[in-house]
Image (tube, rainbow, N blue to C red; front, side, top):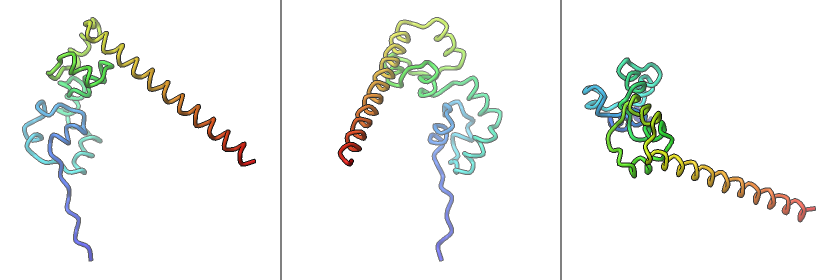
Length: 138
């Protein structure tokens, strides 16, 4: 007979990361209490008011800020943005983008273009290899 499974708990920081929220902005109870997978799923499925408010207005963690600004996490670090930003602050940056944001968005666009080029090249080479393999089998 196998022993009963124990519920695995995650640290509040891990749970906050999975929920896409900034841990220091969460209630003290959330910051101090380990979270089970079931609790995390429940929070995600039916978020309490504080969670919905954080997701809507922030402050947001770095990955969310970078995504909303259309830049990489590294670009955000290069720009010197160390603090969590609210949705309003992010909107202001998007309305009147500073030079660093324009540059980082251009860099991000170039990276996406290069990734698409490499992906297309690999697909083309795979097609050639498949065709070559088909002709040698005949």
